[in-house]
Image (cartoon, rainbow, N blue to C red):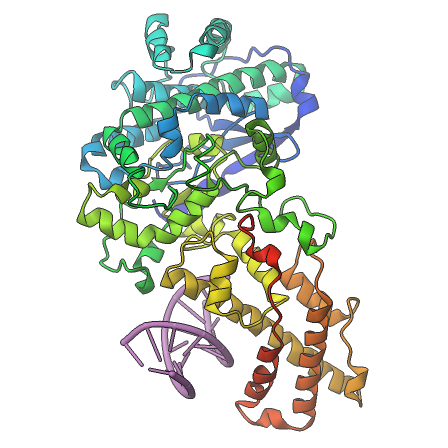
Length: 567
DNA sequence: CACGTACCTG
DNA sequence: CAGGTACGTG
């Protein structure tokens, strides 16, 4: 899937947000049946931050393929989300990813899923709900009619029952069954929903959204859980690998992976053979249960740009704890899920993903050498429907598409996330020239490869570049303004220079910049001012002297940055 | 040669 | 911010 298609898909996705109040007003929904040949965009519903229901419409023709990001879906509440997770077996929870591309034995299944997805996306009039349900039902219970393009017919009760029996969650089966009966009736009413009409319908009869939402909730939750279960149940090889996880060969957490082909080609990644994995490979961490904490730490992530926080001292800066849980986030799974959902994430093992991602290259190479490698289990990815991916609110779903990666706010490259970047920027307030040791100390949850190290160093190089550019700019400006004495050059929190810097390194302004940084900034500014005023800038390497001064002004990184709970 | 850095570019 | 490159250092 090339980037243009992906972008096309993105651009053709429109969102309609309904606040929960509106949703709750819905009591029933009886949309007009769709004409079977109508061009109907598929619709997915997601819960965004602020408990907004977001409906996405994927125009026909601009569709996902299995190598594209999850889009779509789904949970209408944290409770729902938790309900979904309960269906996951411990095995599956430990299996962050399955890489079908690495297992020829799973090629057939992979192909099936891809077909399913294509069928989903190219089936006019197919309701996303049905598509999703059918996707996993097909995976689990049938292997036929996957590309009919027909509207998925509801399974007969017997088959449904058989499928349900696969669920290991007996405690909820009764509840589910009764729900099923009710929902089955409802589903029959809008098997073919013209989503455009649906939207109009919502607008005209908002009181019926609730029922629709409920149905969607149920179906999507079920689809998610089943898909996950079916995937894992169908991967005995991975089960074996899982069992080997505990053999002590590696203490590295399982992680989902992201390595777009561009990155894979990156020389420092140790995978330059041009053996780009199947470009449709998606990595999906399906871990939804608490991992064994003695083995790895389940992180809590939130988007760096989410929820601007009031300024808080570093010691209380939760932003530093976003990649791994802080003590205060060692809450119950429900609370944790709530937090994650509030942040737009599900309870997934981001940390495991991150750490895996950092190992992506070496692991992948090993996997190619020996597919039975224990560690190969870490590279297994699974191709699932895009809606499913989004239904899991997976922030770490890594798709090998340049454009997608660029659009992936959560993931930079080589395992470093936006939160890592944010943390690095905050660290810059203390150190402009961090040593590798410091970096490793502060990013201890990152598996340091040469690539990762270089990346972090590159970040700080970029930070410095911006920093010095600003200094030079303001120094020259001061000279032009006629500032005669360097003592007139100060850098306070209200100064333009500081604002520019703060905007760059602390955009959310949720971090209390240490006074020392202001001092160093002032010194730097004055150094530039003096050098320029003395005409030293005629020397091509005139800045080096300044760099030499500034590099000695680094401070120690506060312990908070080195905390094991600090992402 | 590996690594770190600065500089330039997109 | 990342990629590429050049340079200096060990």
